[in-house]
Length: 517
Image 1: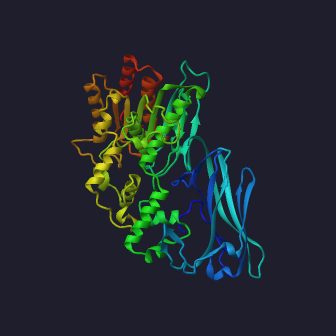
Image 2: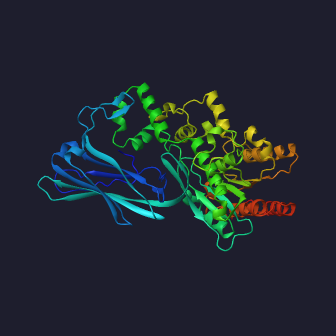
Image 3: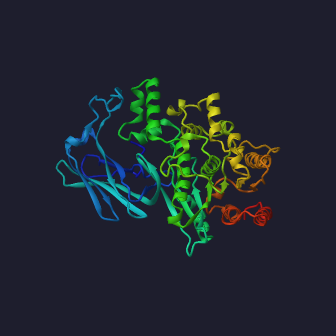
């Protein structure tokens, strides 16, 4: 049980026995920010917590279990679960403890007794802290308590959701009286390789946009599987089953079946993530009157993976991929946007990028795109990319000609910002084709506009000494990126997109130094 959010506490106790391990982790709808060990939950919805108490079997007879208490610290609310000896499962016995359908895949002994379950709280605040403790009496001793470290959960307002999930957002609302027609609005989308991090990353941008008169929703979205290597995912998904013992007791074919079931049951894929972004736009448009926003002035802006999602969602407003549409609520409402800002975002060439990253990232890549994980489950080499898989990437490439070339996207305002030293996006560049991904996307967009008889409104800006994370809201180059994005949005979203406004923006972008200060 090596992977569980909310660090476990191993407390040294009196006597010869080892202290029980107590673990507490938030479940959906709260998605964990795995980088910072922080979780979000959607306010006013039921947030389940998985809990586990584990005790060494050889010492269990020496203690008498009491109860597990999970407490909402801020509101002083508690859930008490009475635990007796009968509450614990004895792993020394050869019983089926992991079953898919009618097939049992795990009957090997594990030398622990454990009790586990789920209890739920309903977050009401912007930040709530939970704790868990297990009371027990050692043989010949006094009542003792073992505790898990606290788990803090941030509250989000709901924007969309479906069966088994609710997606949340942080709002940044301008002060004062809305302009005629309502506030212009921006959907901010955080990065994290589609697999982790949270809306906290975009707070700096959200505040700047709010102060400039934009209604901002800084969204969470369903994350793709986090760890490229399946044994790590297995430990997180099945915290009461140990991966080494499980692997030792099963054949390669069985492990692949379990892997496929686990990833499909517990992980989302990019199709879900794209649909969440589209739902955020539909939410804003459907609630425009209530929120005092202008439904015709909505933009998408993202960093890294969020930038990719902003381009992909923004260029597919006519619904060319049915599986991405009308999921999560507000069915039938248009997901069209006025403009797109991409900060350090990949636009395509995913198949070429495939072998440029580490094994862990490539395995995450496969998980995000819903592909079989192959040798990833045992920390093996990177699985070979098949031609069919390479073709499947194209659906998720914003530069796809079936998106860029659509008449509905002709003249779509797009701003792409990137660092010349970005290790994630410049891995394909050569001296003869620097920053080729940005150049290719901007060129394709403007060529499509010209072919349709419209003005090209796609722009790119490369910062000479910028890297990838420099642009992550408050980073080294984020001031330059923020200024460029603000001028772009002021011309194309807050403004009317008139020739004079566009020219003023283009002049400002060209005059901006390419060196981050």
